[in-house]
Length: 477
Ligand SMILES: Cc1cc2nc3c(=O)[nH]c(=O)nc-3n(C[C@H](O)[C@H](O)[C@H](O)COP(=O)(O)OP(=O)(O)OC[C@H]3O[C@@H](n4cnc5c(N)ncnc54)[C@H](O)[C@@H]3O)c2cc1C
Ligand code: SF4
Image (cartoon, rainbow, N blue to C red; front, side):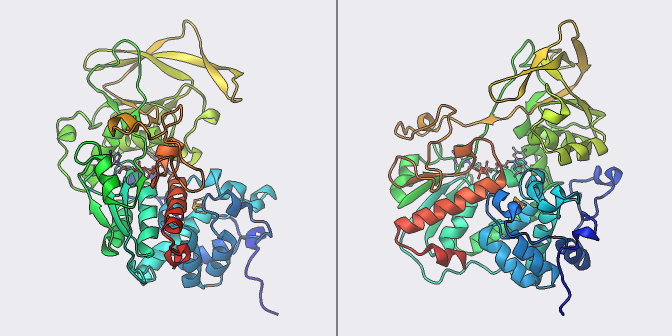
């Protein structure tokens, strides 16, 4: 009888790829996890219990066929595993690195509920596609036939690029417009290299360009070209611009020098990783070296800022958040990584104002968690008389992002938005009320996740292919 290759969770413990020691990883912006060795990936994949109703799959936004690619990995059939993995995910090696797996696939792994730790789904997904790149299994985009229709995509983030990939594979003429000089959106200029190394993103950009996608970079729609011109030039348009308006701080001294936006800080740091000259870094404005840094916020952006400041050689790095650890929106994994690297978290604390110009301190109000509000979340309440000053000579605001007012900026009053300012678009297709205009990713969902942007981009591409009378299955080949 053939040996059972799976269900090893009873005898094999969960193991992640090796994590670099905090003292070493603080010295650079390289990823902190090493790659699985082949034997380790096979061993870890073999822990999957192959359940009949895989909750991991249903909780993955892309409904990745996780049990199948785990079984194929465990049995050494890696090229087939890659085939299945890439059939549902345009950028599996990126999701494997930066999805918050604890909230998605791994958070719903059944073996955890039986007292064993989850299968390392994300790490295996990354391993499969990194190996596929090394082995040359990742094929260039070569459409079987060219189609006459063209699509203009505004925004080269994961949402726009996932749509571009799928449309181009079906032979559609695709032009992607982006403000930045490099494609990738937040994958390139938001998320730091220690979570996602830049060559992983650039490799995908190159693949798209070599496959015939036209990039018009350094091109801001609404300034360098109008939305109306793009609509005129293409048979369909996808808006994939993300959300970039930073939520601001109020209070006395909020406009002082030395109080900066997270997105500016992270963009400058990512640009340095590409070897670019960044005047705001050279001048010290966006450089944490030797400074007492206070980051305000408790989400993933705040986590990326504190860990970047550590790597820039800050004297101290503190993260101020108005709720407690259990109620922070950021990933627990990244918080733990930040703590290991020397970040101090100051829970239940909110800024009331700032002293000095340039800034020298944050006036902090201490909070307690009160009654749950309508959403069920406990609201923070001020503890009177407990204020104090936290010394700071660089304050980074990481309070979240809101959408730009696109109907006004683009002179498109017919472009309908929700009361949050996000674009109103059909859930499964991204279609807006304007004929031939679609929207995907954060500009529809509000600040969300890469995997959801990819899902939207793929779904939208399929809807456009249907509109063109093209076969979406071709795009999957
Ligand atoms: C610091 C940070 C860390 C994050 N970490 C994670 C993480 O670990 N895991 C995760 O899943 N998600 C993470 N996210 C969220 C994730 O990055 C986003 O949900 C995702 O990138 C959204 O994709 P998108 O394609 O909708 O938009 P974006 O990635 O924002 O791309 C939009 C693109 O549109 C361009 N653009 C905007 N306006 C115009 C215009 N007028 N003309 C031309 N181009 C324009 C922008 O330049 C940009 O390139 C993080 C976000 C931030 C800010
Ligand atoms: S795409 Fe994200 S949620 Fe889906 S299997 Fe991969 S890591 Fe998990």
